[in-house]
Figure 1 (spheres, helix red, strand yellow):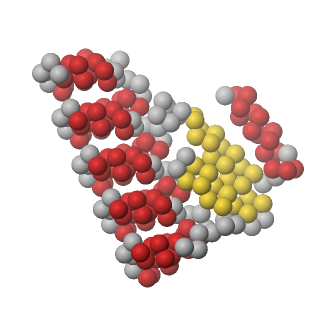
Figure 2 (cartoon, rainbow, N blue to C red):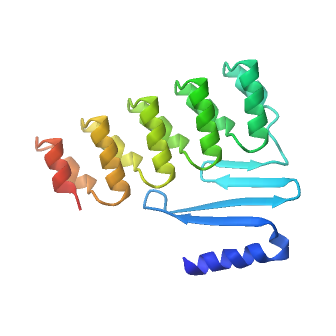
Figure 3 (cartoon, helix red, strand yellow):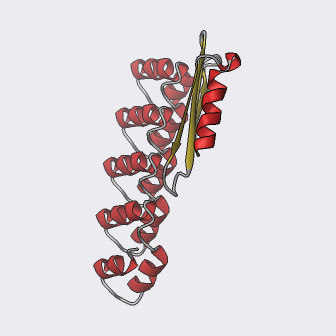
Length: 203
């Protein structure tokens, strides 16, 4: 890891990559390595995250029309288009949030968070599909973006009948590699309580 950071630092210092900021974040098993590269050279801006990529030189001129087609007001559509053209909002994430039933205000917030690498739209959708509230789904999706939540463990716990709060706790424990989901499932299937199964599965 030290070698990687040193190599990137030397790369950023070269004339070809002047004014380039390179940030490498290593998290847990759910997000092993995230590389965030933001490059500014004159008017040029590029952003790249696991679920979002944007080049300011080629703004999405269809963002306004897309927002209108999703039912946004003209004022909001104009704002969304402005944000998208500055790489400050993911229209794809906005659209997916709206299709998941989120309000336009929440969907806009989600689009901004995704564009800044602070929320996983995939986790948001999966949490909603399991019956989570929009507030909880957004919280889980933000934790997942930081590597602090395992959506697979959450889904497994919910499918086994665990409450959403317990499933969230299990998802957080799994992200820290502190619970064995195989053991948890086997104990649950014996008819044991969720509390006992969780206790026995802890590492």
